[in-house]
Image (cartoon, rainbow, N blue to C red; front, side, top):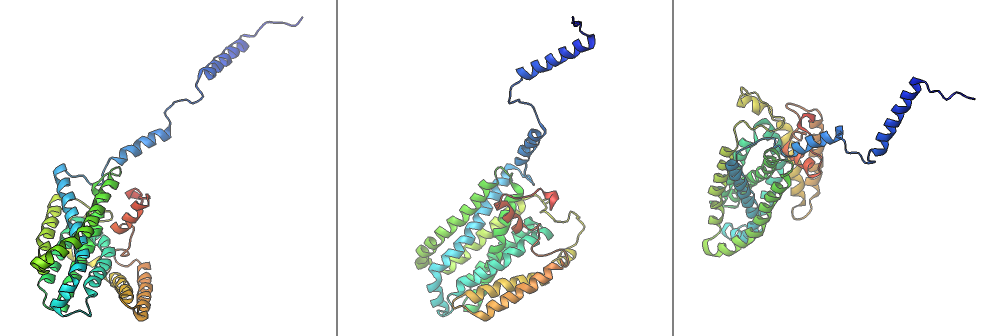
Length: 335
């Protein structure tokens, strides 16, 4: 007869196997245990509620209202000119060139927009907002006092330069001062300011131009823009830095000016200006061809990454806005 005696080691191994099977049978199929990915999700959730730069609630309210006013004025200036165009052309005897009242503004705005992001990394968004609002105010004053077509266009160009900088800087401030969770809300508020300005600009200009004339409609925008720009300047902490901006406080203005890629900026602006000029009115092939040539030269210049890097750089606010809109904004240390 075969022996039924169990070796002590075999008995202990059997009990261990039974215990492990018992645990396995009692354990739910979908176990709830903390894992490494869940902890990383927790860190990501915390990161959603942290802004790159922090300000007090009072400063935040002042910045939001001031940015809204600047965007509103820019959009109102853009749409209101369509209602005042015929009256201004009659005053300045410029019926044949009336199309340039709007075109000059848009050309300057389009040329300044891609440069503002780079300038914000050399100086600071805080300083650039004040400069942009000052340009807008000066442009409105020059426009309102113009008694010739040439002076009026100069005023429109200056206004466009200020408006182009304001639009880009508004989104840079949103990206830097708001959390990722609330960023979409504040971008929507900024766009609402633009939409409201475009909608009301023609209504306001059309309703008032017959009563007070076109000149007050322009100079009245100057103090509002300057006040809003100053409010943003004094509400943003002086320690605020944009991504890629040097933290060395001893850098002189001359050094900062020397870091600007002037050659790249000139050819980028020439590309935009010539392209828009070629499409204004009747299509003109020579400006369009010149725009293409200027673009090629610009690309060759920027491929060398001269001076402080290319005009269109990953640190620029304009590029960061494009990345944000696609939901692909990276952590600052990856730039």
